[in-house]
Image: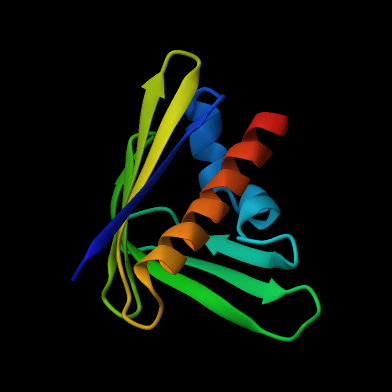
Length: 136
């Protein structure tokens, strides 16, 4: 299985970046790849064996899906690992860089969409996260 890496530098301390990435009240504000979509609800039990669930929907109601995962690793303000329902693995790294935080995500690609489409979609969501975190 091929993996894809995306990353961004968030102009925020690691503690804030971690909280904005993991707390449901923040996840719903940034977890979508395009402005025509939204994340109306999110649940997060951030512990090994805990579940993550985010509802992603087109704002016009034409399409939606639940993004669900089970945590395999949680290292506070450093690393998150989880496995998706189809057994693909995702690893998220938080690295302090002065007053900023470098966030890197490595995820196993799925075989229904092109690698470029997957990378661009996940990167757009990560960019939304960075923009939201920096502006709040």
